[in-house]
Length: 450
Image 1 (spheres, rainbow, N blue to C red):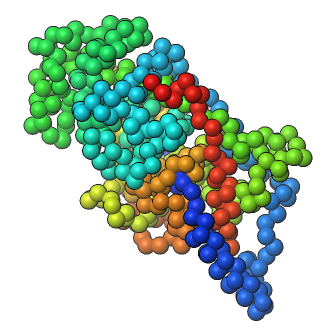
Image 2: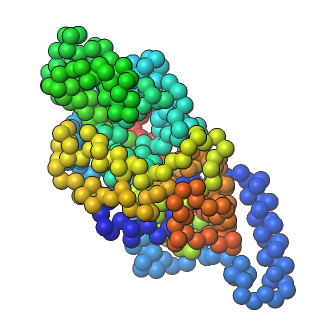
Image 3: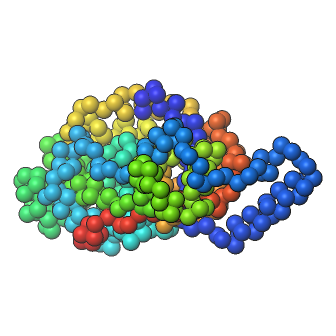
């Protein structure tokens, strides 16, 4: 994270996905309307809520016009110098097979697609992802994951290919190990692997390559770690190379997951070409919600760019979820340290580039990292509940209610000082109506199954 990153951190992430509760919002809107009418009737002149409703079709200013242009359309993934196979069709085909392969798990029942289900926009709808066990956080969508410099909620990985390796060895997720993964690839995917990456090492030699082995730095007594440490350095390097190639193939597949244009994209295209029919492409409430989103509500400060995320990390002072695991998650502080130490990071032995500007200036001791988590994309947010990294909120209505009240204090670190309330006179129903227009068709059907 470069020295300029702080300047982007001026507004917290509106981590919303899911559907509003119409009854709750209707009651809230009715009560607010009643209070507003009473206040205006009493002649309280300077109440903002007494002002006329926002004109959804007012002319866009030059700055708003430029902002709309920056939000749409979604483009194809940019080249990734860290993975020379990122756009290799053979690697993508192998990655697709690996993504749906349940054999890459300790119990033979968990694939990447178990938690990243295509029909759910590559999430699973659970507060905590469930693999061989229960993970401490929910599964974020993979759509748009290529667009940010750091992956996972705490940013502990810095590429899609290295991110794909983390769940494979995470005990609550796949519960697997890199040695077993290499054996599985040799048994099930040898031809495709060797056609893409070259010959596999002689994994059939069990004196050199045991059935299970991986480094477990925090538990040197773990049987996988003991087996790993007993291997020759050259053999460990060979297995790491196969493991890295597994991740690079999965990234090549995940880069194919580009959704079709959303209603919002069609609206922006019409606005940019001065089409008089533009207003017919979104409901009135959604057009008002868009103006709130890029205007007074300031959501766009963090949710910007075509994927509606700045890729940065923010401490929102979220309430602790009743179902959250014990202990305190320090967020980006630990994630920044972990990515700098990661063997599969940019510039590492298995990276295809040494140019790593995001890591060059990354300081894990940066005070604002404490308790901060990554801004999620809002694309398809309607369909990817629950919200926040441990599923604190079940609906978008709950998310907006949080931003309009900001209850409690940060569990660790401090809530960002620039975080301000979304004004009560901004109707959350309209913002949610706008968020619904970010729902896109699924990617090409050929990438949605094994």
